[in-house]
Length: 119
Length: 107
Image (cartoon, rainbow over all chains, first blue to last red; front, side, top):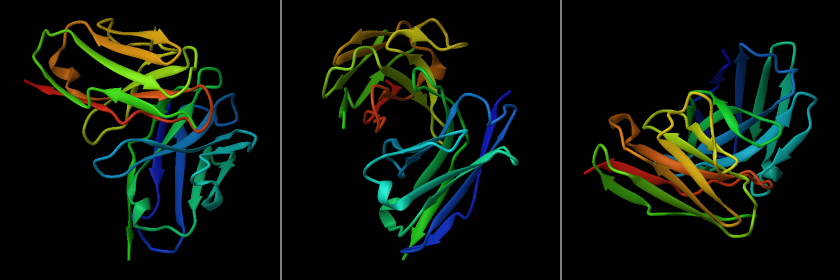
C-alpha cells in the first residue's frame, strides 16, 4: 500500500526558509509517477505548489515559482520542498501527494503537516 | 491560469437526499476535471477523475458529468459518511487549480 508521510518543522520564522520532506513507502519513487506538494491555509481551500518527476523535472505554480525548490532523493525514497522568504501568508497545512502521469490525479496523499510562520 | 468556481459554497441536506454540486472553469478544458472529498483534519480523497470516471473503491452513489467548462458531481443518496467538503480540480494545464469547495452538512 502506498503511504506518504510529511516531516519538518511546524514553526518557521518570517523571512526564513520552510523545508519539508515527504517519505514514500510501499512504492518506489523511481517508478513512473510524479510527486507533488499542495497546501491549505487554515479554513481555506487547496493550492497546488508544484510537482517533481522521479528524474527531477519540476513544474511550479507561477505564483510561488520564484521562492520554491523541490528535489528527489531516490536512495531514501523521498522528496522535498523548500520555500524561501516565508511570510504569514505561507501558514498552511502542507500535503505531499502522488500524481498520476496521464490524468493528473492526486491519488495518494500524506496526512499533512501544519506549518506556522511566526513574526 | 484556469480559474475554477463552485456552487453552492455550502448546502444542508439529509441522509438519503440527492445532492448536486456544480463546478465551472474559466476556459474550456474538455474533461480534464477531478473531484475530491475532504473531511476535517484529513487529506483530500479523489472520487472522480476525467469528469466522469469513478476512482477505484469509491461507492457508486458518486457520479460526475460534464465537459468543456461546466461539470457536476452528484451523490445519488447521501450517506452519513458523505458530510464533507468537496473540491473540483482542473487537470488540463498547470497550475492545477482547485475550486473553492462546497461544504455539505447535515440539515
